[in-house]
Image (cartoon, rainbow, N blue to C red):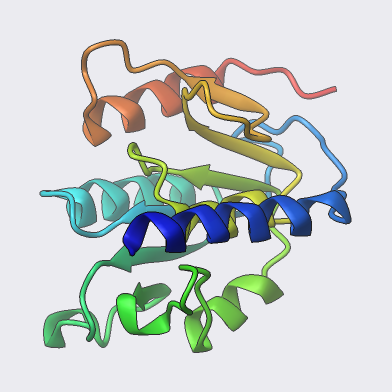
Length: 178
């Protein structure tokens, strides 16, 4: 049954993307004013890595909001009061895995310069958010699947969020926006 749900979800996403257009622009950490970070909160140490990266962005003067996905029905109690961290749970998904709810509505109101996708596994639940984001510069992990990232980081054999964070810092820092 899960395979059918995902197959239908991918088809729905593909149909939504037909009418979706966004303006693209290259940003670095000096030229960007706002950013959104997406991550899979199930990955060990992911919160620590994302929190540190968010601190780095704030030091650069970039307004940053973070959205995480947990494959659980409810948000753990210790995550309820995190400032500028919003959690999407399994109970926020519809039948074909498209997220909804309060956190997703907040996400849709964001119009960031940069979208930084820390997901390594490219979950369909988060691909709805990544691919339908109006962010002008999208950064994510390399994938051979169809995507609209403007910059992809190849993790080779690392497959580690800390390494991805380090590489994003390095490569985005050396970009010269037009």
